[in-house]
Amino acid sequence: MERTQLSLTVKNLRKEYGLTQEELAMKSGVGLNFIRDLEQGKPTLRMDKVNQLLDLFNYTLVATPKYQSI
Image 1 (cartoon, one colour):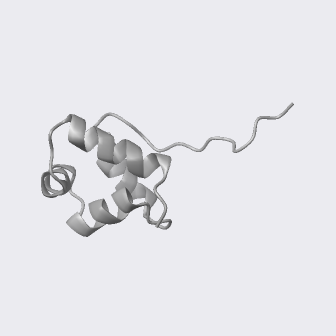
Image 2: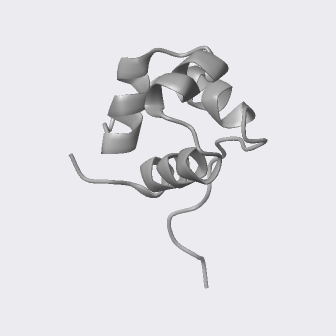
């Protein structure tokens, strides 16, 4: 799986706060396998769970345009 901006952001935030994957799973209320899949860049994840995890860091998942219009 290819790492994504989301997977890199979550991993960096986790490390910045000094959390293991297990601790992050427990604190955010999602499963350990979900954390592992997310950090490895799994292309299909439940958005509600992603936002549940991101909420711990005061982040949210939002849609952004792929390309800027001229």
